[in-house]
Length: 202
Ligand code: GRF
Picture 1 (cartoon, helix red, strand yellow):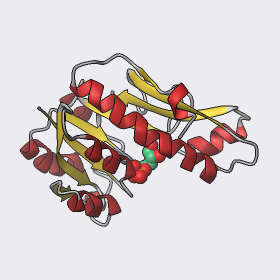
Picture 2 (cartoon, rainbow, N blue to C red; picture 1 turned 45 degrees about the vertical axis):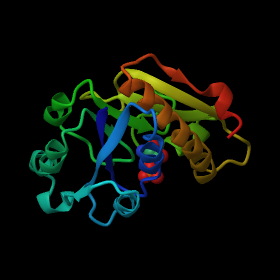
Picture 3 (spheres, rainbow, N blue to C red; picture 1 turned 120 degrees about the vertical axis):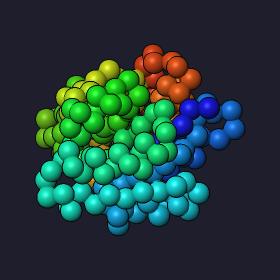
Picture 4 (cartoon, protein in one colour; picture 1 turned 180 degrees about the vertical axis):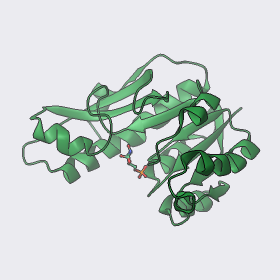
């Protein structure tokens, strides 16, 4: 059984989808949900789901990312994860931290990478006149929102979409894509998951 730690910064809806998926014959189990924000709603939701939680407030480190990460590493290493999932974790990690988990750290990003790394992905896709948007699960490397793509789900951009309506549509697909990728990844299968056809029906 693989041990999975999940890092969140906010609401944690992707974390909830991941935790709920890890039952039965799933090859992994959640061992920790950690956050850089002690007030993150995701921590409460994890606790409700019976998953151990930890919080390290990044603001106490005044921009010293390495010092913040050194503190965050404590509970993570204690949980002995095989896989680390970033799920709406809004801190950029240092190359040193990424290296430590290389080949076993995943992230979900709300765009069809390599398009629109970084923030405001939905507004950028709408402003560009794109006909579709989506989300990507990828392995984390030292370059932000880069690294081998493990799965993508595509959704149409509809006329009248705002960044908010598009974000809500994409998020529903994130909740299907991320668990699907994690299940395969935990079983050792790194071939890309494509959800284009099924995702249209969500
Ligand atoms: C998701 O859209 C994720 O892709 C993005 O932030 C959002 C987090 O949502 N980076 P949640 O915390 O999982 O509800």
